[in-house]
Image: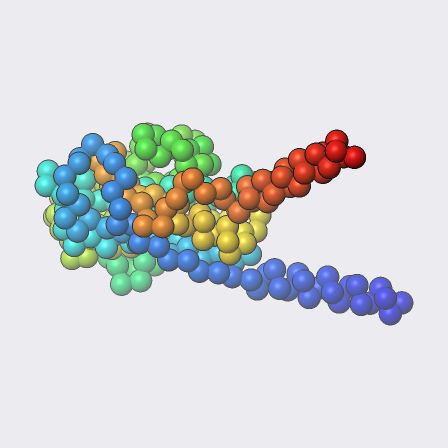
Length: 254
């Protein structure tokens, strides 16, 4: 009886630990990753904060630009997509919210919207990869057309109207036309995942994420991006394979 009670207590304690576990990783996007405009970045930059808590992943995406590359028009100045790779055994189950971040405001058609207001009708998520330079990323958050299997944060399907609907810098570097819409300077997204992330997996995912400006106009990555390094889940598989190979060799020598 005591043993059973001890097991139950241990399980409950572990469940409580999993539910309470959380980790936060913030990354800066300052490194050129390509696009149709190849002029100097001239202050183009972004930031994302990834917060994992249990099966919940919150992402605060912010346009931190202080300048724009030569040749950018208004729509090019908008941050429109975030691409990242969850571990291969984890996917997005649903997107529960896309709201204007603290200290941010709506622009143009969204000028009446303030912090906490939803913009879920113009932002979507997918596990189906993206177009152009987003094609190697399994998960995309976007307001841009041209991505696959999009599901809007308001629970509906259909196209989004980007790049308008994207995130402008603060102060705004290119005036948004009145008939259009945008947010200055951040949007917070809430996602439900199919599994739990370790802190190492969250860091790898964040470090190797990418952002898009305009429609394939410019992409930025983090200074810590290293696509040659396997994700933590893959490292475990590599180790298992190495041990298995070593055992076979030892048996062959015996």
